[in-house]
Length: 55
Image (cartoon, rainbow, N blue to C red; front, top):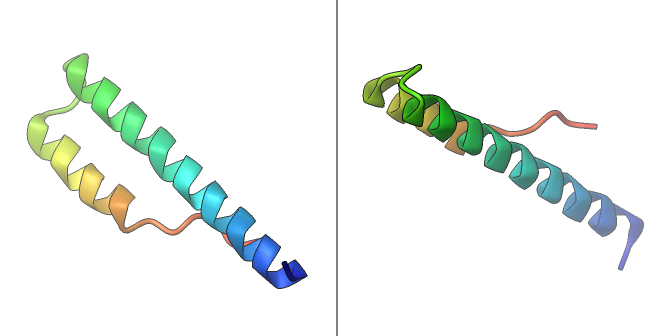
């Protein structure tokens, strides 16, 4: 595996981890009644399209 491929794989893992945490918190806020279903759905769309910070 080349150095660039390893870096690319690591970046993909960080992005996936970030999206998973954001999705978790989004769902938790909804379940606790802190945000509406509409707000949860709008945020889910943003999370799914999110690209993590580039390094």
